Image 1: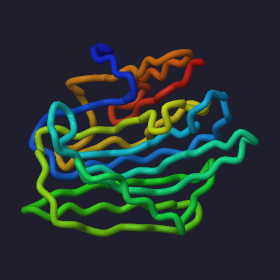
Image 2: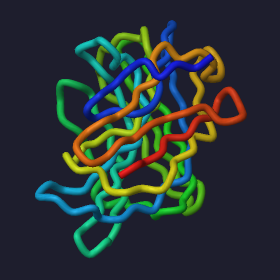
Image 3: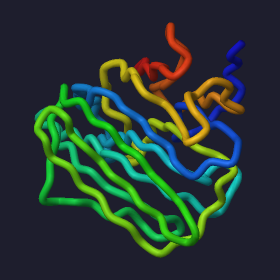
Image 4: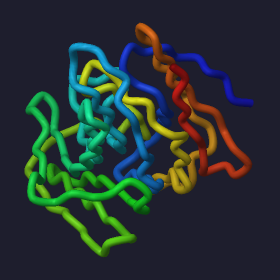
Length: 198
């Protein structure tokens, strides 16, 4: 039975424990609309290794930035904490595209790939990095201090090297002023949805 047992100011999604060196997530990029405020309207969708309760995190994902005129820009990125994110500013995806993201870690080498099945674009690489492999994450994150109003995001694949996401140790709900992002299981064990409620 799923229990929503974690509340975060900027995360919504799932964390799974184990000996995890590969995390895969797949979803359709949602359309989003501007909600106002003085901060950028940006939301990130990512998978990662080692972030929960750790000071390291290897992650890759996409950032959805919505302008005040409701122009949506989708940019892929990766990040190895404590370093900041590295964006591929020359590559942009579109709302509605089917995207798969995976991160991998082995013997001091962290790799990633972000693939847009709709357009055929892909971006990947590797860096020297050391991270914990005790957790894997599938997260929707407030990365612009104001989350745009996005459509429901269904993660149609959420898996690790150990198999499908079956028993998350923590299911995060995100709560901040004027908005709540929450997650729930849907019918299959490796799928879940993150919703937005303004």
